[in-house]
Image (cartoon, protein in one colour):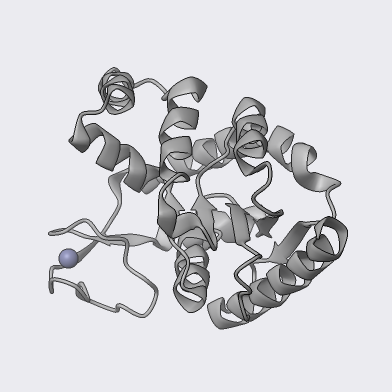
Length: 225
Ligand SMILES: [Zn+2]
């Protein structure tokens, strides 16, 4: 997709655990030369950097609590001020609540349209995928399906995640849907909202996501420019 300097490509990725959101965000960001902003990563960075927001986030996480909307909005807002987001970004894990979505709209004012992608996968497929999901026992990286026995990064042994037992997985999905339904309603009627079938081979999902973002972005450009 050619990027004109007066246009930015701002993407929000929604999708439950096991939908392939991380992989697809990564691929899209790499292909289009955009930063992938995953909330897990930037939270860790903020905590490490010891900023006021980072300390607040660290305290919440240490106490086993959710990081508050104010802190999440502060940390993501700071990240979106960095110059590498000028031509756009791919957001993975934010917004998770309606106040966060409203705050993102405020940040986006004057920065071009927001394309929102919701990757949808049937519940029984998610349960099956999550039960089969493995991580590296040494470095902890999530193992893509094509790693059969050992870690592609460090050679460590692949193991099942301890928090991927059936009951915990089902509960994580319930929590996700409860949290996310209001976000899908928030964005659902916008001309730049697209639902993607995630129950297809990863390369097919990549291609359909690319086409959907291109098309939604063009529609929005026609409206906004
Ligand atoms: Zn490893």
